[in-house]
Amino acid sequence: MTASSAHDRLAAALAPLPLVAILRGLRPDESVAIGSVLVDAGWRIVEVPLNSPEPLLSIAALADALPDALVGAGTVLTARDVHEVHAAGARLVVAPNFSADVVREAVGLGMIALPGVLSASEAFAALAEGAAGLKLFPAEMVSPAAVKALRAVLEPATVVLPVGGITLENMGAYRAAGASGFGVGSSLYKPGASVEAVAAAARRWAAAWHGTPGADPTRA
Image 1 (cartoon, rainbow, N blue to C red):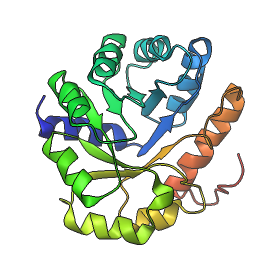
Image 2 (cartoon, rainbow, N blue to C red; image 1 turned 90 degrees about the vertical axis):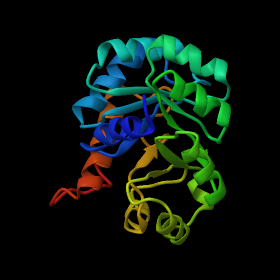
Image 3 (cartoon, one colour; image 1 turned 120 degrees about the vertical axis):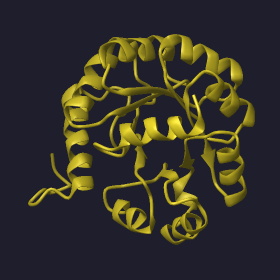
Image 4 (tube, rainbow, N blue to C red; image 1 turned 30 degrees about the vertical axis):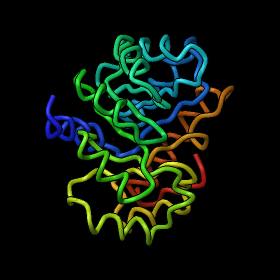
């Protein structure tokens, strides 16, 4: 898969709703139910971090049950991790850092690589290795003004997704600065959360992004 086709696939998955569901702590026995309510709320990208319980089982279950979603693995730190998540059915590799080895392995396997970066140097190095987009992490350390400055030197089509500390209240400022979308973690899913609670949170985030007239983003 070429870098351009990976970018196109990522852009297509983000088009309906450019939010990535980060399901850290997800258990295999709840994975399909949680993933299904996310898809029902319009989410199309689901990420299971590898420091979750039996993450490969959850990834495999989600990939099988949600053919219209882009299922990925997060906290992917080594080339071996890339191979394991690919075998489980993941087609997206997300990391908190930029590792050239991880990006190369993912690209070589026809996967979409979304490495974590925090500087222009890391951003351009990741893109040069074939990353389809950039996870700006941790966003708590990067103001909307910094996002705007980074966006000014990147190609306009570059996908930039701030992750970490993004809330319903500050999402608008980052979006105005040029964020393509966001990764959403604990405010969407926490271990032990009910399916109903996740569904309600998913709808809140979707309504906030779309700016649904009359929607109150603080309520389900």
